[in-house]
Length: 304
Image 1 (cartoon, rainbow, N blue to C red):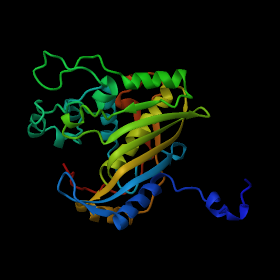
Image 2 (image 1 turned 90 degrees about the vertical axis):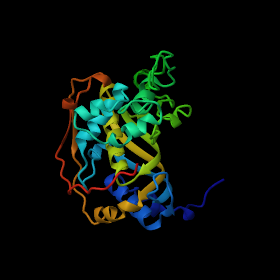
Image 3 (image 1 turned 30 degrees about the vertical axis):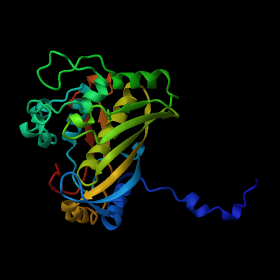
Image 4 (image 1 turned 90 degrees about the horizontal axis):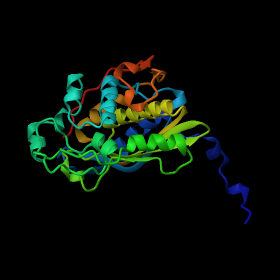
């Protein structure tokens, strides 16, 4: 069947989709103005929109938001913590990172028969020891055997040996353990894609706190994409963020309105130590951003 070319919108084809930080701001604006009011687990209330996608061309710069200052140190240490497989916040706290403190209190961890600071089978566990059995000798609920799947090691080997695979996936969501933690993984799975010697990554995030959490998640997975690309001897392509329940908490509305009044700065550049060839060998000192210019940070309360 021959299509009538007159029905094709050539203008729509020519117009490229909005990318990078502007796409994030557009999503904030959409949810703020058209989101549905909903109740939520925290009792705070949200404006919510279901299903959204943002694309970041990593060749255009590193996607660290410029319309508010984002704490890059916390992003780096959190990602290194995930990659280590640890689920205890002591590593973060020793390095001055407090972003998981609200879920690491004795009141929160005691609900799952764990000591203060031990978050249980969260990201690090799922990434590095997915499906591991529990030790029968464990005195509390986070003593696991080292018999699970190391998904990070596995996916890097797959990228190196079979880059055309459509199974380059890491899952943070384990249904059998999702109710064993105070905060089940929000970024549930991510997939890599190799084309033209470039590595791209897509994240699916089931629950997206657009104002506080998502800026961290975007930068974190963009950083991970750069790190994996380096150890696999690839260039970087795109980071694609896909959100499920995309929400703005009711007590963040003023902060979002302020952010939307601000103009964009040029994105910074990420610098990695080129001598690091092992994903688990990166240290904080091997990672930095150059030329980061932003508006001041905007404080907001975390909904727990």
